[in-house]
Image (tube, rainbow, N blue to C red; front, top):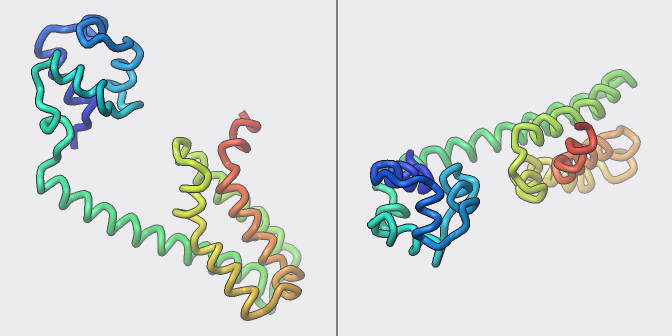
Length: 186
């Protein structure tokens, strides 16, 4: 699927314009053109109108997608939701098994704490442009639900003593504050 920035870049090149010349003719900043073509920014409003007028494009040509692309997007969304659902339940099962199982030793609880840091930090590392709140909602919804289930079913004291609540809170904290943590690590 071709992005708006890619379409602008191709059209500009086909017309023999440099980024500098496009910026000059459209009366916009060169850095804005560069960000748009590198897909760092999505042009909107007046900027989009100015670029379209210079390149003789219709705004609809840049912003509309074909019906097939939209259908592909629905399939991708459904698969993403399914795998996020599976991932959340897998994490819930891992943390629960390592902390609540009758044979849970200090080693398994330590493993749960380590996993509650390293799995979310890996997710943060793979999703650097995602905000903490978005990441927490996508990857931590199951953990939030699990906290509520633990509080209702086994109670706070048992959840706290077993270490399960601690693991869940650490995982959510890393998901939310992960960008800050990765900056400190670098």
